[in-house]
Length: 442
Image (cartoon, rainbow, N blue to C red; front, side, top):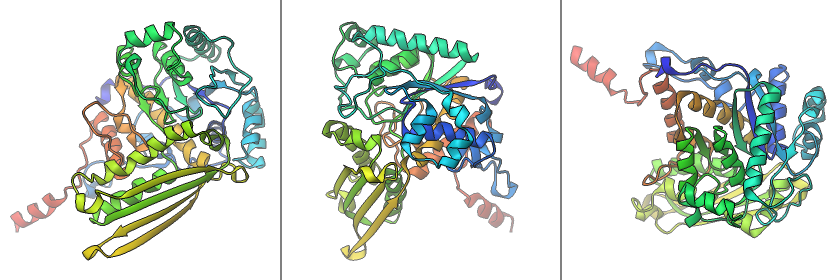
């Protein structure tokens, strides 16, 4: 497909619901600091990662950004919506993630990024009370207003292409219902202002109807429904999600595959977090936490496959809690107490205390997802982008398949997809052929 890939041209718009949040402002400020040569894009696979091509003895390992026709960070233009009127500089100061020195060096750039009025319904995010919101309760009018915002943003910045990435709050827990099973049913519910349609779905619908790929960075239902999937396919746009894989869950997708690889058993895995930013405040509501909990709990089940290894994993106990603790701000701390057992059933323990920075971990994921989803759009890969599972806690997947959560398998899927697109052979790490050939020639 290498010769069929449309080359990136012009600027690429990045539309962000929740543009004034800690994650968004850290991402935007970070991109500008990188563009000015004031910082390095650490954590971004597309910017600092390499990809092996061919046999090991060929030593072909280009940077991914040099191997695949991606937009440059210089091409990105930012816009979005927020519940609060603060510009990106003011919002970044409030978030207290980046140093004053960093923010002052790009103050003019950040101050020029002002949010558009958001679509907001407090029934879905109870612990926030935004004031900078679009008036009225008519859902169809809200979608049309968002689409008008998109048109104006593209015109103002001379853009042909955009990506929308949800960096807004975690909404209350929702299950897919009858209205979510088909586009026609969803549209009928939309016209009736159905209370089961949250704001995130309105943003997603506005994106899909505008031919813009949508990435879900939260655990919300949003595009994880048959109706949204069919709309994505109809409009020939990619969708990806859900829930950025950053702190504690990142650790689980690193550690759990290791335990399973060595056939070590699991008795229990207790996880607790303290977090003090706006995300922590939102998750202090039990129904928003339920959405996050479902996302975090599913990881071990799919990695460990207790149905295949009942002796090792059938009855393990898994507990996840998140506690709002304002003094900690964006500096989340996650504790894991892991009870395992080995040879002859003898018990052992693993303790993990991950003192991480939530937005620092999320920002490079957003950059990669924007660039890679745009690549998918130019290639013509519409619908679910399972090859981007590497970045999510609850990867979207085709009906009838189980999601792949193992971080290392996810990375192999991602890189093999890039190899496929560029006409390179898949890397299987087989290796035995070297020794079989040697034996045959001896």
